[in-house]
Length: 81
Image (cartoon, rainbow, N blue to C red; front, side):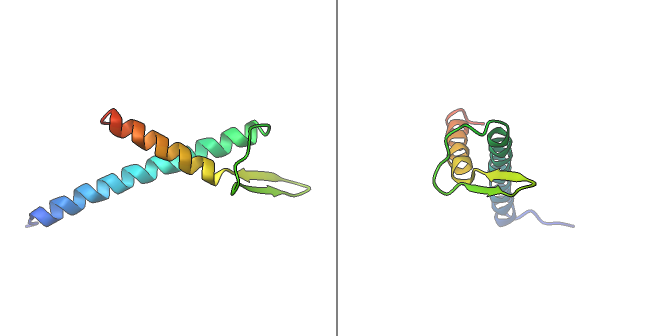
C-alpha cells in the first residue's frame, strides 16, 4: 500500500511545475531554432551560437529562447494556464 503523505503531494506538485517549465523552454528553443534556420536575416542576440561549415550551417538562439520562454511563462501565469 502506497501512502500519500503531504510531503509526497507537495513534491508531486513541484515536479509537475518543473516539468511544465521544461516543456515550455524546450518547445520555445525548438521553435526559435527552426525559425532562425528558416529565416537567417532575423536579428541575432549576443550569445547566440552559430556553426558555419562548408557542408552545413546550424544556429542555436539560446538567449532568444530564454527571453521567449520567460515571456511565455509570464503570459501563462497571467492567463492561469
